[in-house]
Image: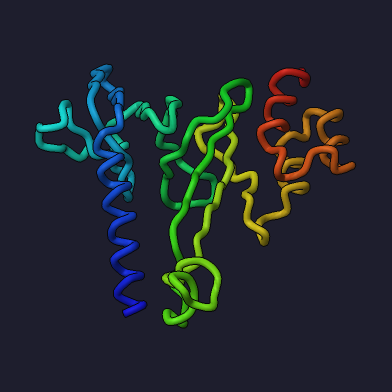
Amino acid sequence: MKYTAHILFLLLAFSTVQLQAQKTKAILTFKNGTVLEGLGKLKSFGKVKFRKARKEKAIKYSFEELEKVKIYEGGEINTYVYRPVKDSEFPKVLQLIEKGKVTLYRKHSEGYVANANMGTGGFGGAGVGFGAGNYYSINNYYVQRGNEEEVTHLGSNQLFSKNFKKAASSYFADCASLIEKIQNKEFKKRHIREVVEYYNNDCN
């Protein structure tokens, strides 16, 4: 019974997210200059699902033919682009966070990882959470200068991620004052946006 309740809960949550996503306003800008306004949501494998009106049939577009996608999320307009990644075979759909001499992008991932023991947790169980899995929320950050064709992975909020101090010091090596702040830990990996803002505003 507990297992059935867990599955029903996840299906309900998934259906709610899907329904909300179908009502999300979106603006698609194609590489040929065409602009479409309607309702849309991001899909996996570099796709966006779009319809001009709620009752119209949805169409999937590839980011390979899109310049950018703007989606209204949580009261904000978020811009997504498709960028090749340094040392990676596949491009990624990234959210534009900060634009300047160096542009900052984010890749957000969230979901549930199934527990080995489905019988413990939530809904009256002894464990933590709902028992159907452990929730995760991961942000990976990428940077790109105007003359660079690829984005560079700078760090993430994961506990065991690449050495941010080393990666940031290397990427921003042309700004001594910023390197000093990174080396003395005034800027840590949780300050990635502040690092990019400092570079754009205070480094020549």
